[in-house]
Image 1: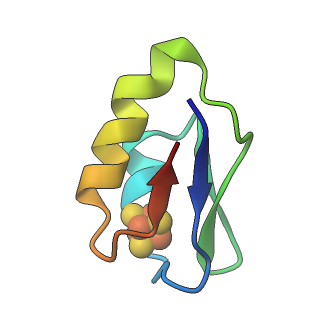
Image 2: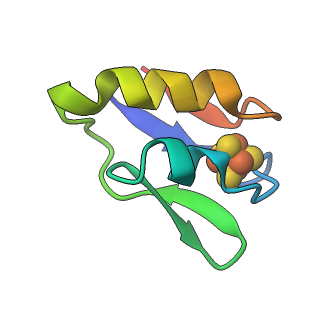
Length: 61
Ligand code: SF4
């Protein structure tokens, strides 16, 4: 599973970082992914982050 954050959409709310700190981190005022490939054990947390994101900036492939 791959994940990216659309920096044009991200409003820097920090929700995804709270929900899944193993995958997301804040860089300046935007969330970025630490690695594009999501570890198997983090897939559920990562999907939850996508659902919580208020601007649908998280893209899972
Ligand atoms: S939840 Fe969405 S808007 Fe908030 S920091 Fe993460 S990617 Fe950005």
